[in-house]
Length: 234
Image 1 (cartoon, rainbow, N blue to C red):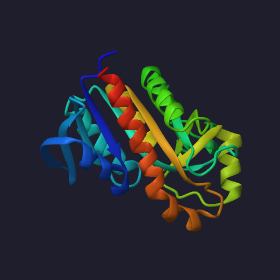
Image 2 (image 1 turned 120 degrees about the vertical axis):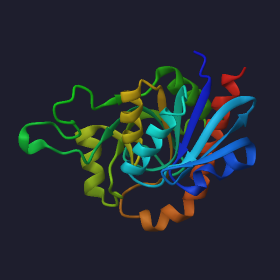
Image 3 (image 1 turned 135 degrees about the vertical axis):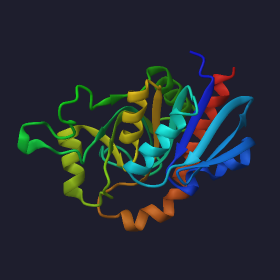
Image 4 (image 1 turned 90 degrees about the vertical axis):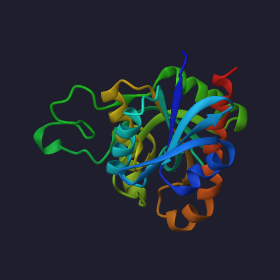
């Protein structure tokens, strides 16, 4: 599939710094307080930005990108591991994305289900998933998996919460943006994939791990995005 213009979103400065160093930026614009950079990476047109932290920031950012006629969206960054086999520095490529803090279970809905809406487990684009998986395996062999990304406006930092997210929702990792990006992409019929590098284990040691590993993990995510785009143009 030919993805003409690629949208790239990161939630934090660390996640897009390397893009500034590699993209030949042709223009920039500010919409809703978010700066969008348009340029070329390996001759491929990209539009990238920093969304800010949380689901609302990510949703606004994604909708504005949709209005800029991107053909697909890559969301890159860091996350806390939920699957116990994952270690710091490992990569998760989204199979799908669910909002773990969408909880209307008292009314008979399952956790994560958006009431009165058919779709709430948003499936990533299989072609983008394969590109991301191939990139992750080449760059970090044996340290990656495809799995469900869970999102919520909460920084998960207890073993009990991690166990619940793993057992109830089957999550691979947890973060604060991916599912809102996925929902907006679904509403606009835009293919997407979320790529997360594990910066902590979301298990109570986050205060020790997060600051130390964020830069490394964000670098891992960038290398995968870079690899995907290089292979798109081959």
